[in-house]
Length: 525
Image (cartoon, rainbow, N blue to C red; front, side):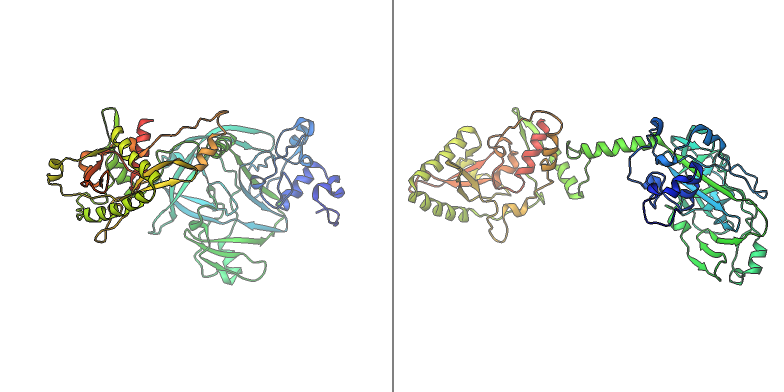
């Protein structure tokens, strides 16, 4: 493009000698980015540097900055065969592009195909342009009106040679299929409605082309000569525009392309007349929509993990558990009561009292060998009785028939960082006849706040508060019908009679306790 030496384009002396309009033509000819001169579209460019010439804050390279006089002097001659208004946008903003060009040596064939458009109540036969380089599907306004298409309003900037128009348009969806063929239509979504497409009508003589090129002679090409383009299909409708079959001939000959919409052609044809060069470049920008999407993306990033998402996706099992928790949760005497999370409400448990008593004997031997631990462990029983976490069952209560009873072995747990404190933990995983209490319970959904969310919330405020709930599980009551599976045996001394106690609060060691207590906490909040 420049003087043949290897250096960046914006540093090329030869390139700088060109006028602004010549530079722009060179950049377009080689398909370079208007911002950084890289080999990509401007809407894919990561460069955020603005022009800066005379205070210009637009997103184009300073070597492409044009004055008002240069804008007015820019013109593109139209072909005698295709007297249509051609448009060339300034490289100012990101957007969607549709591009077509021809030279004086050869003519580029556009992939034009007749199609049937389907609206809610009607259908219409038109010609469509299949453009794999487009990032925006367009439909002409009069066609959208005839099909009674409607959709959300959006703002657009249309850039022409001498004027920039800001207008309101719509995004619509419609179905499309081949003409006169029984096939399932394809859905085209979020197409923009434009009053004019300004794409030159195709000047193609199918008969002459098929007689000249044998590889195209037997394919079913539709007559698209002087066809007026009313729809442009972008690259995201891949299943429609992707080639299903390709007919390739000698070098320099056109290609036959078969798509789901029928046969079409692409490539180049020799130019036999002295037609002048024709360029069509449609640039559609939606700055308000882009800004709105940028703000949404930024906020999604900034607020990630900062709030509890009550609409987060859960498994079907978790949804059923949450429904069960909702039904079994209530307030009794100012305290939340939450039922155990059973896998099967009709589960029957074997009588494992003998196992619990054997474990008690082993515990007593351990306590006798450690007098200090013995005193502290017995104190945990007294404290729980006083706080109302457990109750001692009478002979009458024990004699009452109950279809589901389970006895929990228990043992002390010591924390090396808190040597004075002893915690009594129930062994809900202890098995008897191949099952345990935890085997019959479900852990339920994870209701804990994520660590990421906790860390991210530090960004929102200048101060953080920390609180701890003492014996959190024991603060949540258990319904009376579930308490019978939370029994344990205990006696003051090995010489005393074995008594039966029963938890009336959730315990440390049960699989469902974290979920039940966190559910109650969320209800409190």
